[in-house]
Amino acid sequence: MPETIEIQLKKGVLTLCVLALLNRHDSYAYEIASTLSDAIDMGEGTIYPLMRRMQSDGQVETYLVESPSGPSRKYYRLTDAGRRALDAQTTEWRAFARAVESILDGPAPAAVPAGTTEAVTAERGAAQ
Image 1 (tube, helix red, strand yellow):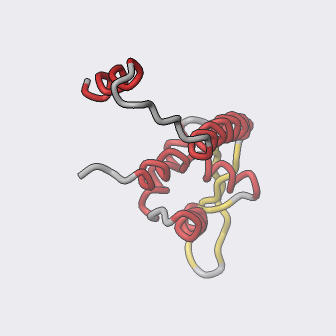
Image 2 (cartoon, one colour):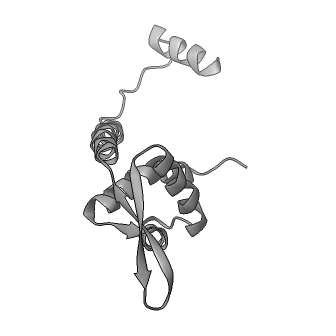
């Protein structure tokens, strides 16, 4: 069964969302997952492999903070490379979103009378 557009969009913007959250403040993976779950209904299991990949890509670095109620927590913070990635992805996202909005909000195409050259050409294109 094909994935819905919503699932595809979530996967496509997940890294951007994590970078944006970490740009606000350092955080641990469960906190990031909870925020994403509330905001875009993203599953918790998705975040851990992503955080490992972002760390290996040099976008985030980690440090431990002792917790009074259990083991130390691994916190993530953006690196300079992560901030550059956030800037680049934000620019790309905004340009993409504007392009999609212009298509969605654009004027409807004019109706082409049946039997005209344009209608026949359009029918052939649709049949291919």
